[in-house]
Image 1 (tube, rainbow, N blue to C red):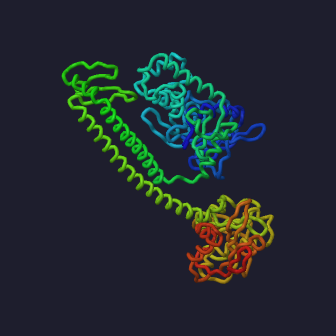
Image 2: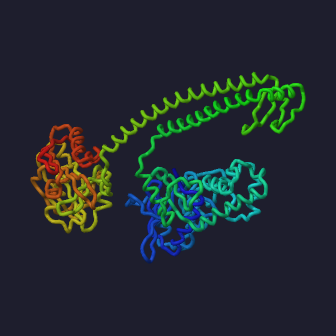
Image 3: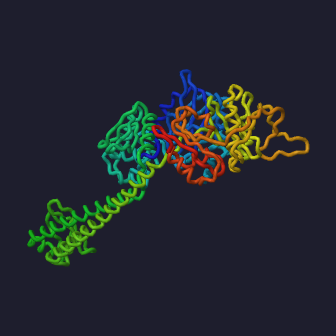
Length: 626
């Protein structure tokens, strides 16, 4: 299966990406080793998604993070609103360069070979790199001059004489020279050899001028096709195995699914690959072994038949071969068109009879002894066949056993609950009020600080339980919220406070304005991490029962499981469970709720209050309490 783009792909993609010239850089995103660059056009936006060393093309990035990584932030800062002036491939290398203009010239250099890398370069010096790499002849890290890796010969720049001269100068096989020295890569090196009708293992220095000219003509044909691409996904028995920008002769037996652009073909291929079941490495190893055993068996059976036929041939022409062996044994020079050569050092006479090439006979032996040697070889080949057949049966049994184990594991994975879509606010405790307002609260001292410092803005409201050890809660756009939301936020803070683990039945909480919340302590006092000073009037909510509903809701079109006061989910959820402080088994409750809501246990753990709980009741669609 295709594992990344090659030089020919980059050649075609560089042409497709010319539409970026004149566009303005908008945003950079990073999710692990995937990066996305968004550009503004007069007619809309385009997104270039890159996995250095593997994939590049126009498509939409999945699970785009809200907060940029330091590398993405550095690119945003340097290239904000920069205009794309050049998109080009370096030679025929797997290197793509985007040159942009804003207070000088910047370059995004996409290295699509090896482990891959991406460097932001300004006036020849690296401002930021996806990963720090140091090689013998260059270093890719911030502050260093950017140097391209040593490249091979650019086949695009060679005329017929230069092409032939390069092949002649190589000590490697033709296919290796084309693949490595001329940057064609294995796929296109094989294709050029196939179209030229030349033995790929032959060495250029051993081939004549005409044959090498044929190889150049085949490369010219491939290059011309790349200038008129017809991208497609190649399928074998319905499974996607390759993507190419042009039809290749080596793929004539595969089905083609064509696309308007290579970017679209690559995006579809990645989507298909992501949805396809992953091949078990152990099963694949066994299948490779079985294939090798089949080839060995075929060779052994051919040898068995061939050696028997040769023995029969010697007996059928006994007198002729007897005379031949006597002549050579006596030092004479045998005649006849079937005698190819005599090797006195190895004591052999090489003959060609019918379709048989280079049958070696030991002239020190009689015809009967040579025949017996052939029969012994046939017996050995038959024994080898039987041994290989037994080994194949064992391998097939291992494959069946391994496939059964894989099927069992796949079924288990399929039945395992899948996590729901993650949102940014899940770094905190969270709920959506009955009026649709988002409430977030700290999980610990660190996130308590973050909730207030990062998210408490003008127009929000702050809620806190009237007890030590409660989370600071922020009601986003709380100035627009009604009494129901403010009460629910107070209840939410109380339920996630130490009142729950203490087993209290009820308690009180309050809410205040953002300007009343301060990190500055009174003179002579000190506020620990996660604590805040509240100044001015507090709006108390008393007699709040400690009860929490765990419910299935829909948020922005996605299913989520939320923990909130009962009033926040009333009428919004068909599946819910109500809990209260108690001496119940928390682990057992978590497992039960995870089964009921069909989510991983981690999602349930994150919405439950600290401490033990008891289940007061649970309801599901179409059922009563369960």
